[in-house]
Image (tube, rainbow, N blue to C red):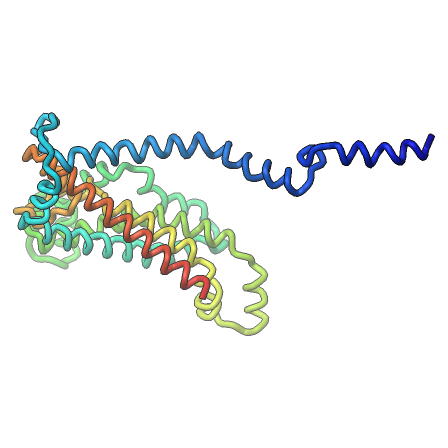
Length: 317
């Protein structure tokens, strides 16, 4: 009886399919198919959300389009050439690159020490974090409106404070000239970008192992050495994430420039996104605006690929 049972059990197991036995082949198939099946709806929605607008913009960019959005004949690359040959395009592109670099670099440089301070254990740390995050809770448009009032040349609070401190002798019309308006816009851009960047860095600092700092302290490492040799290398993935996300956000940022100066005076503070808005809704050149949006998409896509590739190489080196 026991002998027959011992013989029949291996036979039953041999007859079972690989998936039922939990063999390597069955597990591999299930393990591969299950995540793909779960991710497929998300990929489909993402494709619809991203690819359909991109295709629609491509259609507009390659056709004659009136100001009401009605398609005309096929225009090929004519709309793109109109944009590239526009004398305003190149200065606006240079100004956009300058705006993006200054705001992102300034936000990273300011946010890193702020995050290091807020990561320390001190009385009132929760309140300090709340104050730093507060500008993030306010819409960028409302922040720009408040700054426009504060920078008013006649009754602005900025002039009143600076005159009260005897820093300036007479009111400055901050937004009347590009030499003052654009730097002020960059400073405001840094201000509204810092809370998000600080949040990313705080998340990174919270994930760092504390035992390495204890070992560094035992080895008599200074705080600067611990920061430069431990904290900064371990924060590189979070710095990369902050740079990429902020570049995409700042490059496409519309409210600050538009609310403060609408790209003026004389288009001297325009960036690509405000220039695109004027092309589409002021001049009715929807085909040119669509072509410009494809140029902006290509610039951001190329930057993201190059920067992430360089950051990956630096991390693996």
